[in-house]
Image (spheres, rainbow, N blue to C red):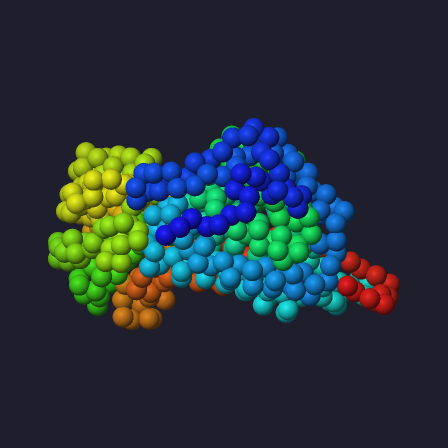
Length: 489
């Protein structure tokens, strides 16, 4: 699978032009399958961040984008969608090469990323940016939704195109200018977005691209010209961003970590639970913020369910991301592999039972591969039940009854996702209402990015997706007049 044919990988996209990075440095992208360098792109430093913000600031403050009628912005976004659709095979290949995602799943994720933009196009035709309302204080009163301003869009490495598109889409529809800061491990998709934005004729400075490491990224967040930060990533980094934005009352949307629980009810068989949970924990090699990483089971069924999950995990074939017979690929990078290994060691030291997995597959001598792993007899106060591992490691926690299961599920700093494993929709509804989490699915990990997605507690602030997600890129203004104006565009 060849690398995407980028036009200017050695440059940054700032102010509508492909420019050389200030430092002249490049970022090396390493394949987690082979541990070999597969691509290089320009690296932005603090000077480049300031240039990008200045370009976005100029585009927003002086340019036409925010003042265009929504229909004209939607038309430009539709051209962007068409350009991206033509390059979905490259977007899919980029994901597989950079983070080792399964080639069989890559086309689906690429299409979902483009669908995020298409959904914004569709929403733009109906969203009430200007509404006349009744008021005792004025003859003509209006509620107007206007763009928040310059947005720093910071995406993670696990689903870089889909998540970056989920930020770019509402920001463009709102009329914002954007500085894209992709993860240094997975910048290729953002390059394709920038190239397609140029092809679609978006005004200069409306979209900018600055791949960078942590120090320069922090400089971007601290820049007072940034009106809003939209960040998806770790809770630790999210806390830092929240502090910076809070210090100057900048807006932020934070989609952070999770330690999501699946509650197994009595009508759901051990074999059914094993199929759902082993399939979920191995998706993207467990590197999903909404992953179901805690399974809560009635104590009397604990051993039966543990045996069933172990059997299912042992049948999962781990292999290279382009291996059609493989069901799970590598972890995305060496440091992620080391992180997962350290948590497995902690789980054993704290007394959890390692039922299966816990090591490197013996048939693979290169790459960042790890076995699907199950811990049983886990107490909810153990480190592996409290902290996000971001790997294919599942903790099985016994409970006394449904009330105890809900207590355990809610006993977490996180609240991003959850599931209720049952054939009884009424029971799933009742339990779902009591779980303190932003998303709950019956019988598995369900996500729909056309609906609002986000978390409670330390899983984040705000929502992405749908009209609710768009609102986070808008400011609300009330206008009260003595008479209705001739035009309300």
